[in-house]
Image 1 (cartoon, rainbow, N blue to C red):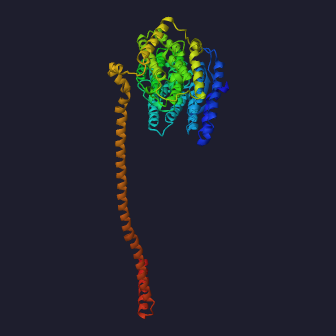
Image 2: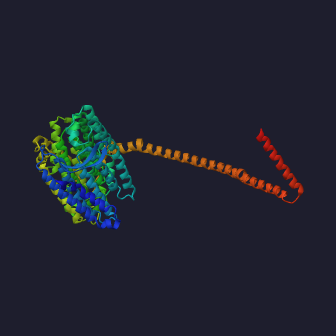
Length: 634
């Protein structure tokens, strides 16, 4: 299975070819990026078929291995490994990545920097594929960091504008906070086990509860940053400043999925801790509820989907916190398809309506039937309506909570499900029904519609593959139980009905002011994002800015003092140097010259021909000789 190494390598090579080229050449070679991801998709499908039907008895197959560094006598390996979990995730990533790249051809065709966009998109896909095919936590962390860089570049693609520029910085810094926890977790892991390899860390070491808790909580903190869990969720809604297809990739199958995948891979450590499982469950439940409530008050269609992503990621953490590995991974798979579908649909809607504000939309169903049908399928899947995939995976999470007697988490999950169905109905009725708010509405290009249709078809049928996916992962995913299914469907229908009652019964004018007034302080708090951003701004951002400003002033003062002092010292030294040069150096030279002149005058006086001068000279010589003889005799 050596070809498996080409799955992440092909898009990485596409980036390596495109990135250094001049802009004009990059733009012409965009098909190279698309061809690379199509190649990765074909190879991922072959790898998936190779390990089918999966199960616990399938041993990981090493497709590529090398040592990228040495620490003392120990080598740090870099391996591409195929097991059922990695094969499934690689297939999901390549399907969504291919859909996004094909869609981007139509969506980004007017962009002057389209070549750079596709280059970064290829690197992003390669990093995620490396992550899911990694064989160690260290290798996973390396790919994790590359994804962080790519998300920064994609979110800030329109860096000339203030919004994308600040959003990219916010996303980069917020996720870096979580990455510190991940890095510390790796250090503790190596100190405890002496290895980063999955096999050794997860199955070859008997974890003590305290060490397991320390490592698991640090890994969880890293996952909370990447997967936008409370309180590190604030970067994800702002990430909507980037191109919509990039948002689809970030929110569906790559960036945010990485945190869930990390916790899923490390679940044996969490289970050895026990405490870490409980923390994961609590964080996931709160995130699912808060994300849903915040989505219900947004007017920007992309931010509704962003907070929806936060909420659904919370559901996945709930499943993992309850010990439901298969349930969490199953919802990760279904969510990747229907959420990427919704984001791509949002891009078509924004192109047609020329706005992201749902209050300025309406009546799109009459003019855009394909988009309406595809987006409606994704919306109903998100709401958990059967027989779409979201119903099956969400039902499995609820089943796990019932089986594990996590009734409080079950109650929170049901409330979150109701809120999800409510904001789905709100979005759909605001956008697709009622009178059109804009003129000239029409369907998008075929290269934008085709990926949506494919994703809608997958969303419609993949739910029925739940038991097979569970068996492939080595776990059991049963068909929905009648009691839990009835409860799940009832909550979804109630949420949709409430959304229709508020937003679907309108004729010409929609007035929700009375509802907002009844909500009172809760609505105000939700519109202010439950004060998370304000809190961070007040206690972290502004104090940091003030400190930086003071340090800058201090640095300027110190630098000015040093420069001025140096100037004064230089002037003093220059003055001393001038005096020394004039007095000592010039004095010595001039004195020597005067002595030579005087000596010359004296010598010349001897050579004038006077007898008295000769006598004096002879007398002086005789005296000198006598003195020397006396001294020598003594």
